[in-house]
Amino acid sequence: MKNAAVKKTTALRNMLRDPGLSFLMEAHNGLSAKIAEEAGFGGIWGSGLSISAALGVRDNNEASWTQVMEVVEFMADATTVPILLDGDTGYGNFNSARRLVTKLEQRGVAGVCIEDKLFPKTNSFIRGTAQPLAEPGEFAGKIRAMKEAQRDPDFVVVARVEALIAGHGMEEALRRGEMYRKAGADAVLIHSSKKNASEILEFKKEWGDRLPLVIVPTKYYTTPTEAFREAGFKIVIWANHLMRSALTTMQATAKRIFEDQHLMNVEEKVAPLAEVFRLQGESELEQAEKAYLPKGGPVAKGIVLAAGKGHAELGELVKDKPKTMIPVDGKPILGHIVDAYRASNVRDLVVVRGYAKDSVNLQNVTYVDNDAWETTSELASLAAAKASLEGPCLVSYGDVIFRKYVLDEMLETEGDFVVAVDSMTPGEAPARRADWAVCSEPHSRTTILREVALKDIVNDPKDKGITGQWTGLLKLSAAGSKAVREMIDGMPEAERNKATVPDLLRRVVKSGLAVRVVYSRGGWLDVNTLEDLVKGTAFR
Image 1 (cartoon, rainbow, N blue to C red):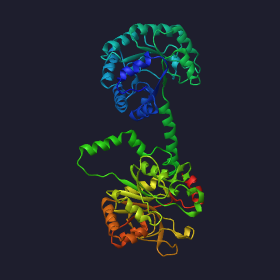
Image 2: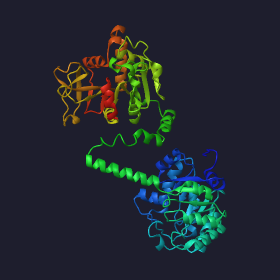
Image 3: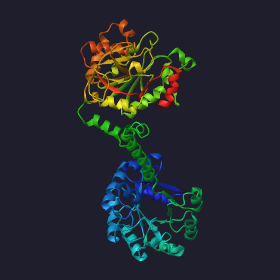
């Protein structure tokens, strides 16, 4: 188990000492190392193959040892668990190898594994039987030099025996392993390219418990792990699977984007930027900025108006919970909304509850209540969250699901008041009442280069000048939030209780303030009916 009080070198050595089987997960940069630790692995294998691949070169010492050192330093900084570096052949003779140990200790790396091949090395699975091995006496001297160079007594040096890979047989593998043990190695990695574990199990039987044994079952992956545990191996290394899985996904994503020439089919399938920022430790930097930088730069908020019960057509679905908590594709509507905000790095979320408010209980969300939800409208709910109308802010409805790209475009658009408008026109939609937007010009290929302004919001699709439908998304700057607060405060209570957000936008426009329009095509869904719930499943 991970223990922050235990040195990384000690934690790795404990894997060799303690009973049972331990596992190291391959990583090739700081991000993959952090992912491995978060997955639960108590240690990391700094794979030479994977680091080389990530740098775009062959696993033939084409990356210099200083380049590898720079990568592994980022890995060590990003994690709290020990790293065992794949040190190839030690990058030269005994002098290079002992300098390697010194530099690894300085960077907080817990151990290194070197293999008994000649420098520059070639990956073991490429023409393995044709690869010359190091003279075992010279390699044993390299191990002695490394052990004498270390300053931390718990730093681990693992000797990797390549005799089976190179076709020299079991006797030679055992002879080399014994020489390396006597030279001071802390463990032996016995390597095999067979598709079954017969060689390494035979080696373990002959070897006994002279030194802890480490294995890499890349080729004999079908062998049950329990067989390794029963045989008494100490560490299993999953040697390259984060790199290979990333490779598969990147190839598919690149092909998809190249063929489509847009991001619509991949954006929802890849990790959100918020997850990247989380892994990078952005939240710690945010707290540090609050502590060390001059005050200012407020974090954007999202306010979700979700006090209403829902349409009568929803029947039993809203018997004991509001519409915002109805599941769509296994997750409440509100859950989809919150996820979209967080995916766009809007983390400070405020939800206005009303009907059956105790059922609105998502975690890591701030709640305010509009207990008069049954006799008031949307602006009364926004007034309940007035304290959060401070600085940059987003406002949306609790029954409107939207895709991340719609929100991202709004966040990138400057203006005190910004609204998202679907460029669908009344002629393309059913003749129904909705929040139809009248804008300064319709959507076209050229409007992306110009600022389009909202002129009005109407309900009748037969009204003239309609250029799209308002999606229920509103972004406010700090000045915009201040203006909205003042408008709310200046309204008579009776008027405010009946007013909707479109009424607010009409008031903003009439006051002479500019409301900027961001056009989109689809990417949102207003969930009002059973048919909409079915659409919601496909939408996600």
